[in-house]
Length: 108
Image (cartoon, rainbow, N blue to C red):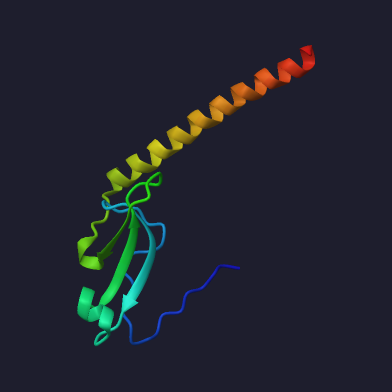
């Protein structure tokens, strides 16, 4: 069963989704600041997104919808392929370690 998030009918829908890659980073959270609220007066009303600039970073930045730029299809494909390549290198290194361990236990 997929988790469901309910958004009140009088709120606009978020423009971006959790896990979406953008030029600013990966969206890992969002909040809605209703009009006439303290937070809306301070930061502006609407959706405010929490963005992790890099998966190995502690940096977490916050943006409004209009401050976030989507990646082009080429940029998105390039990012995903780079991540696949990185994981493949890790898999290859682990496979090599497994071969060494297996040979060591047969010979040992």
